[in-house]
Image 1 (cartoon, rainbow, N blue to C red):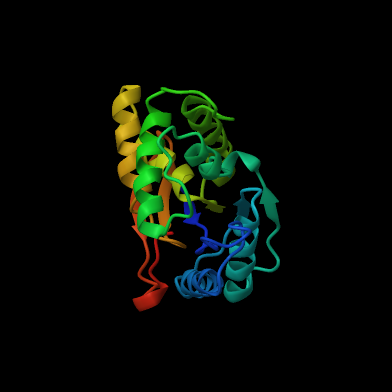
Image 2 (cartoon, one colour):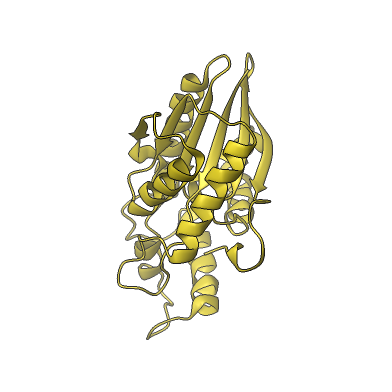
Length: 222
């Protein structure tokens, strides 16, 4: 039996000129996770990351702390997050001026509800296309895990939520799947691990959102 370890990237730089850069906390989260996985005896047969800077930096922090420098890190843009900035910008009732974290979260949740429902225009990628893209990369990573392999995937919260929703309720109608996605997406912790086992019947979720390697101020959601 193989396994996938789906890792959400460390904390990015909310409010900075470039969001796609890990904060100091994000780097520490990556190092803590790498050390924790190494202590558990995890030795990946493959490491895959999305094509975003926060994915790369999280993978770098993990690999260094875990001592996995001999394992090649492969890039698969299918694990990239959706464009949350474009999504919020397309929301018709966007308040004027800068938003603090709480205000942004409120607008973000309303904007993603509009996006997942298929309403409105102005999106570079529809929610349905996003889901198809993610599940295609999941299929490739599942094949890589094969019998007895361990694939570590560094991605984002929205992407991992797609995978979890699909595995928890594979026969769900699109509206139900979108509601599940939203529930999982809003609670995924930075640098958390979601474990998926791969057997003869395919992929099944074992755990969601593990973050026991974190404590205190290192537990963040955005």
